[in-house]
Every structure is written in structure tokens, then in C-alpha cells.
Length: 141
Image 1 (cartoon, helix red, strand yellow):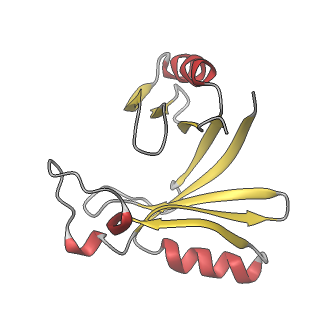
Image 2 (tube, one colour):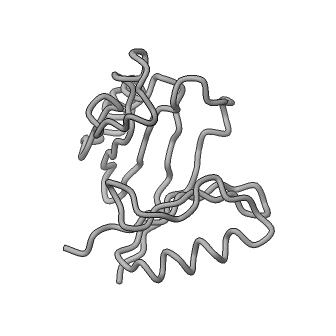
């Protein structure tokens, strides 16, 4: 079982620009980039045209480390300077559940831990200190 702690930058429509900037400045390589328009469509939540080109998820490699990015969905609140979250990624669904449950004590669940199209267990929680964590379970390969 591997566990990684990864900085996750939430941008306000300029994630592609930030990825390009960090690519040049940090000599980073793009490992993955997907826009909201490339995600499977959900008829219950139609995608506005202005969101289609925004980044839903991206990962860049900087040396031995990675940084993850996404743009916020149009209309969501965004405050510059508070857009960094911590992504805890594991291949163990039970470990993800234990971490999520521990962090939610006296905190606030932003998205319940649940199966998504990209993860068997993914959720977002802000702990009692105001730090927001994304808990992500990777499929064991």
C-alpha cells in the first residue's frame, strides 16, 4: 500500500496558463491533462459552454515530485491565495476511508467519500484547522 501527499492547486480558469508557466520555470513535464469537456457527460448537471475548456484535472512532474491542478467550476467561489489543497492518494480503499473519517472529526465534509468515474473512493474534507484535503484512491494496477 502506497500513500502520497500531493499539493493540489485550484485555479480560477487559468490552470492551463499556470501549467505552462510552471513547465517552463520548473522544467516540469505534463503527465496528465483533462478538461471538463473531455469528462463523461452527466445529464443531471449540464456543462456550461464556458467550462468545457477548463482543466478538470492535471498532473505535472517536477523532478521526483508531482503537483496536481484543476480549475474551479464556473460560479464556484475562489479566493486567490487559498487555492492550495492537499491530495492524499492511496491504493487502499480502507486506508482512504480511515483517513477521511479521521480528518472529518470536527471538520466539514465538502464531498462525501464515494465512488466516481476516476476513483473507487474519492472525497473532499476540510479539517478542524481549516485545511482542505482531497482523498483519492487509485485503482491497484
